[in-house]
Amino acid sequence: MLDDSSEDVRSQHPRLALETTEPTLFGRGWISGMLSSILGIVGLATVLCFRFPHLLTIPELLDKYPVPFIRGSLHIVLVTSFLMGTVSICLRKNKTLGLIGISLTLIAALLGGSGVTVGNLSGEPFLALDWFVLNLIVYSAVYIPLERVFAKHPEQPTLRKEWRVDLTYFFLHTLLIQTTSLLTMQPAMVFFDWARLSAIEQTVSTIPLVLQIPACLLVADFAQYWVHRAFHAVPFLWRFHAIHHSAEAMDWLAGARLHLVDAVLTRGLTYIPIYVLGFSQTAIVVYVIVVAIQATFIHANVRWEFRWIRGLIATPCFHHWHHAAEPEAIDKNFSVHSPLWDWIFGTYYMPGRWPRKYGLCGKRDVPSSWLLQFLYPFWRRGTSLPQSNTEE
Ligand SMILES: [Zn+2]
Ligand SMILES: [Zn+2]
Image 1 (cartoon, rainbow, N blue to C red):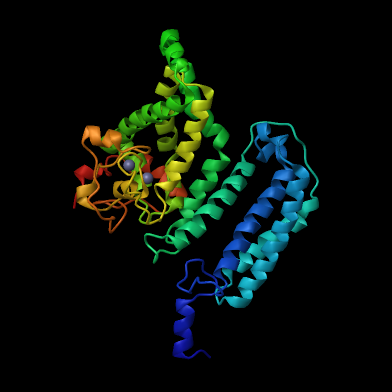
Image 2 (image 1 turned 30 degrees about the vertical axis):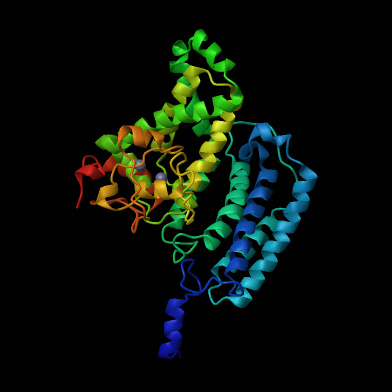
């Protein structure tokens, strides 16, 4: 029978819950558990990509993958995941992370492990599971250590409240990259081809690349600024964008929380002027990479203020204020790349400190599961007004 103190310890440090107050310092089994889980996901997803390449990989990338290297790395990933999972189970009262890592590794091994047979290669459409794996490796390797060492809010755990729903967004957005890219670029190409003037295209193409890239970013940010502002001002659009603002913790993963309609409409409308002006392919590729990096970074839980450059570049502090649950910050800091447009249009807000609270001001009726969030804009008709109308 448990005495009071051991019951206390158990309720504080549950054995099978991912959100726990149990310490996460080196030697407490958290780092090994996280490594085991992430490597387990990476390992299993890679085995699935090998088995079902026609369904789960981007066709254009297929012949570029160094298969022997990936098989070797996969072997190391699976062995490390298993070992780290065992270490975590030994060190930690909460066994969840270790068990997840070991279970995923065993499933991957049962499906063939690093010696898995390559499946049928042809066929479309596909889900980009390989893209999810690549993104998960890069983002978790960069941001998890960064947000632990340089955190603005060190009390906020990596597996904070609602991390699951944000990881679902991250998973689905990377998995559906083919569909969302098509939905983003195709409308501009189909409906705005008439607006492309050869005189303008020729002028733009003569601009050197070093100037074309910042010009492309400024044009995109101008379009993005007004689309974003419209999402805040128009009640019908706000219902979709309120999902992004419902995040009550800021970190790299929170940036992924975007309703599909919000993501596609914002990127699609932003792409129109880029397409019409005829920026070079290289400038557009650089723009896409910068968006991916900056849109994640400005949400990150890092304390760097970049004081020397924050008037030019959108920083985490700048965008954290966009998410602040403080009345003075409502409808401020719409830009993603540079605060310039906020300066010009009077929505710049940087009071010299960081926000104390994030999320929605006023009415907070956004559900917490992905599916209900997806349905929310369609069934909460007329009840969720823009924040400027719902100040407490
Ligand atoms: Zn917003
Ligand atoms: Zn945001």
